Structures are given as C-alpha cells and as structure tokens.
View 1 (tube, helix red, strand yellow):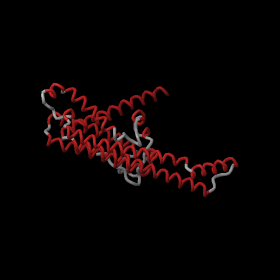
View 2: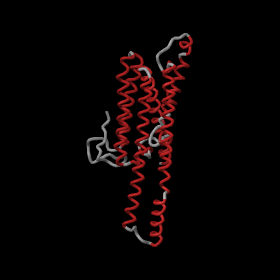
View 3: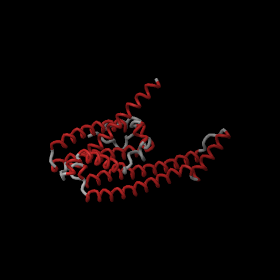
View 4: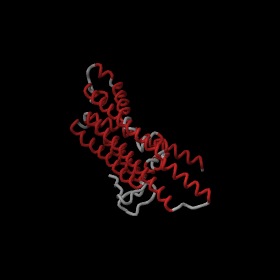
Length: 271
C-alpha cells in the first residue's frame, strides 16, 4: 500500500526531507491510483468466480484502501491546506472542476448507485420478469431501498450543512478585520512605506485563522465522503458491494485518464 507521509514532511508541491514516503501528494495520489486499478482487476475476477462469503474480504480491502487515501489527505492538509483545496495541482483539471471541497460530493455515491442499478436491472429484465435474480445491484430489495433512501436523506442534510458552513467561512475573507488590514496596508503602499511589523503579524494571524477553518471544512467533507461510502456498502450484500466498488473504480479511473489526455493535448498546443 502507498506510504503515508510523515507528519513533519508532508507537502503537495515541495519535496520532503524525509525518505520515508512520497515527496508530494501528487506522487502519493498517482501511486494510490495504480493500487486502485489493481483492486479493480481483483474485484472483476472475484465477481465472476467467488461466493458471497468469499466477497467480503476483498470488499473490506478496498474500503481500507479508501480510508488510507483520506488519512493521507488529512496529513498533507496539515501542511498545505490551500494546495489540497486546489486539486488541479495533483489531479487532472477536468476532474478538479467537478470537485466539492477537495473531492467528490458525498451524494454522488447515490447517483452512481442508481445509475449502475438501473443499467444492471435493464440488462437482466428477462430474468427479473421471471423472478430470477443475479444478486447484483439490479436486485436491490425493497428493505435495502428503504435504508438507502434514509441514508441519502441524511447525507443530503449533512452535505448541505457543510456547504453552508463553507459559505460562511468564505465570507470571512471580507470581514471587518480583513477589510481593515487591507486598507492599512494599501495606505502604507501609497505613502511608500514598508509593512509595519505589527501589521505584518496581524495579517499572518488572520490568514492562519482562515486556513484553520479551511482545514476543518476539508476534514468534515472527507469524513462524510468516507462515512457515506462505508454506510452504503454496509447495506449491500457482499456481491453487490463488489459490483458497486467496480463501478466506482471504473468511473474514477477512466475520468482521471481522459482528463489527463485532455490536459496533455492542451499543454502540447501551447508549446
């Protein structure tokens, strides 16, 4: 498994002094994607041969892999929260454009589930009409659908709360303290003066407070992402969990790859 950064050396754009882990979050992320692709191959093989009992272990392994990713993000955000919330520095620009607070929206997990469930249901319509199921996402039971609906409502509410808190925090960029500081510094510049030591300290303190708030927003967003994924998988049977995680990996890996190709073409056109 890709190595977590040391808490003292994590960075998104600069090299670590320690040799114990990857030098940038981008390096870690690319390594994590290679592992995700290996897990995808394993899941596809398992979906074709394994029983329900045999499917739980690989499902848990993939969930552990996602948890590892969020632990790494948490470590890097302690050192450079601004880069973690500027994902085009470590992923493709197309993917980054659809991010919500440094990652996918938790509610997207449900869009993926319903899309894959509908596709699989359509593919096995004949079997469904005759009361025969394949045990995949097209066979979600009424009780499962009720639990999924409740989880979705809860997730929508939590996502909305985080969005509202993020909006409030973004508004602090124009609070009275920041407006006062920007005016004071502008006046100094007009007079041709340098920063007064006290003003410089005030600026740093205020910016650090704002960065602290951003760290908390990212932590809450990532916690909800992981919690939602685990809760959804918990509702499913092992074989359904395998099918869902296959769909999630395929969606993530292909969009990332297509985005990298587009970025490469754009950069080539500029040279």
